[in-house]
Length: 307
Image (tube, rainbow, N blue to C red; front, side, top):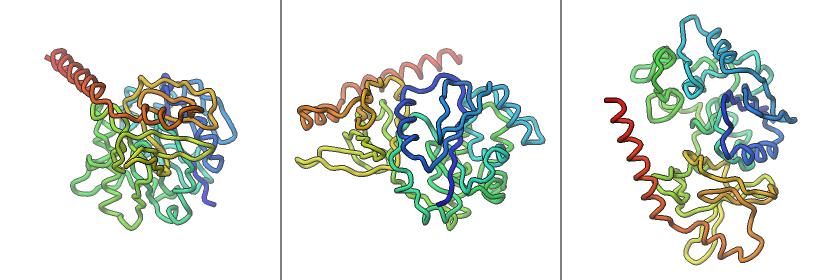
């Protein structure tokens, strides 16, 4: 079995989904998770923690390059994600694959989807919430390769602006892998990237199309569930990503079986299961409108401040 390590430089307050993330990470014992952090991350058998301040990690990144980089705040770290294999090569020796991701999500059974056949490729998935790369010189240095029409890593690493160098749809690294090295890519989407509240307060899977859904986690399995045409349907998922939902609450007391609703993580219901789940996954049009207006007001205030 090919070895995998996922890298998380994280500085600041952990997201509200962290406890859920941690439980799901521990239930994937064949994958290691490596932190560089000042946060309260407790080490475990497959969770490796390098305690440091953000300034310490800034120095590690700068030492990897012979030009002055811009890494002026933790959020700028997203620009460097596809360079972690190059920057942190001394930390990941011995692993077949390395990757990066987010903490505002919950994993299912990673090895169900990231199979040995999938790992015959060099570049997997490609999204900021989870991406894997083969740990070899070619893949680790690919972010440096220049190609017409694609972002330059030096440009991305020398501006304080966010260029989305690590993501799809911005002519960054993922687009370059997909377009220039398609045979080396595994770009399936067996995950669920959930709609932002301003797009749809209730859960909709932006990439797999299901609407008004919930997520059920039992043992090490994650399922997207919905009530459709008079019956419940389930689809297994690699992970679910809950972006821009800092207002969620963790109400779980039994992590062996829980659900994720639009505003919380909570125990799987023991009584009136059908009615309870249908209530949680209902369409919430008014809440969507509320978040649309909230984001509009924030945008207007930002414009006023910039004038």
